[in-house]
Image 1: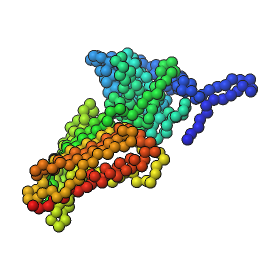
Image 2: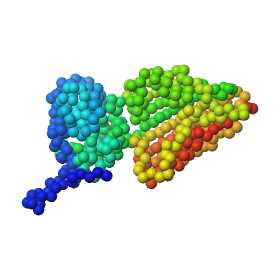
Image 3: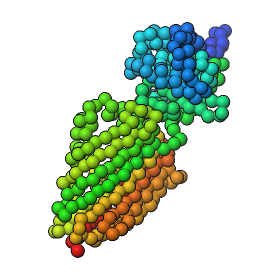
Image 4: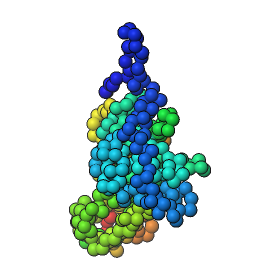
Length: 404
């Protein structure tokens, strides 16, 4: 817990009371009046010619916003510094093509306003900076931008991250709520976490031979934050390095590897992998043992502590979905397989569903994990721990094949 000066009382020596951070109105007016914040927003001549070019083909406010957002992301690179105030100033940052978070996102907000878009800066406390629960000047260390459209919709933007899209903020900024600041010093709370689920959807097609070796293909689709995280991690690597790390992670040998939309951030990541594996099936006394999710099964509960005093922070709501189709070898039949399971967290915070269906020589599986709340309060820790315990047990439960 951190404290800061709220105000000074000079009444006893004939002066006045001077408030600094006793109300949100006072906090936001103080920040906005700063020469490194509000004054920077008013500057516009330095980008005037570029803005005219950007808007030349825009047909509506949504296109104007998208064009300006992509321009700022490509024009000014983030130097890695957090701040709600500019350092060298917006004009110099624009000219040099690099700046801190405030310089980049105040430029974005200013350009949007100059284009006739209803845009305002949003003060943010990053995840490593704590939660500003009460009016505070020092509690915010970052700034992003918010756009309100005439149809009632709004989006939040952060141009420091080149793979970010509308409402898909960098993980560092997904810290509960921000504070939108208006020109008159008024402000209001803005939710930073997305309402939609970021998805990881997997389709697994596998054939097992008589020796217990596996060949097959899996397809992965990643949306929203999952897609952004993939691009952040893998777009800086050579393809052969991505293939090697995937082989090591899953214990497979990749024969063919393909990724679509790695740089097209408007579309999901689509990954296709053709593979073989020699150590995915366990043979004991003539029987074959394996998890129907093979290398995609979650095999460890991340929650090991007996108790927890802090919330579980997932960052955003999410869904992991797995579908598998497994062809068993000729001469074998299924002796046993996992029973169906469906469990949920309290308050509709999450669900897990798992089902195996047998059809002739094929095993079909569907498994879905969905977390609807980005924050799980500590009083539900025992519930989330038990939830993951059952999830891991079910996903690692074996199918047993025996010879006919």
